[in-house]
Structures are given as structure tokens and as C-alpha cells.
Image 1 (cartoon, rainbow, N blue to C red):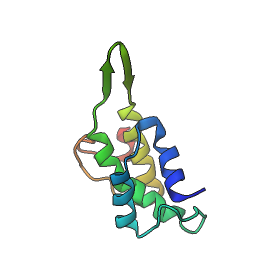
Image 2: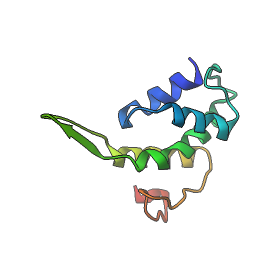
Image 3: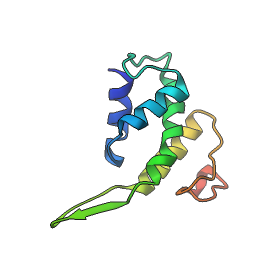
Length: 107
């Protein structure tokens, strides 16, 4: 599975990643989206995913058009962010959409 496939599938419940998201991820991690995910690079992939989450939280919570509605679980995304931070020994940042987090136990 490629890095692109991995992060797209991991975030599929929270919306679609754009080409700009993939490019930002690649620039921040120096990983190619076409590189195969392995045990060795997984920590770097997860760190890159932590960096993408704040921009995903800035997206709309729901969209309705002509009777069709779709919504995304931003609380789940916040919990996933905190989980990834804890797993990778990263201090969560107080970023837009996350509020101030004083402890991993806040969620």
C-alpha cells in the first residue's frame, strides 16, 4: 500500500484529501506519496498525519445540497489527533478547531 493510499484511507471517515493535502504532507515529511508504507516509515507517516489534521478541522462540518446531506465527525478527528500525538510522543498544539488541550485525558 502506498503512502497516499494509507493516509487517504485513514482519513476517509473525515473527508476527502485533496492533492494540496498530499503535497503538503510530502513536503513536510520528505516522503513520496508513491512510496510503500512499511514498519520503518510508519512513525514518519503518522507524524505527517498529525500535521494534516488541523487543516482538516477547518473544513465544514456538514454540507447539504438539494436534499442530500453529508457530515463529518470532527470530534472523532480530534480524538484521533490526540491518539496519534500520544502514540508518537508529540505534545498536542492548541490549534484552530482543537481548542486548548491541557491533557490527553480531556478527550
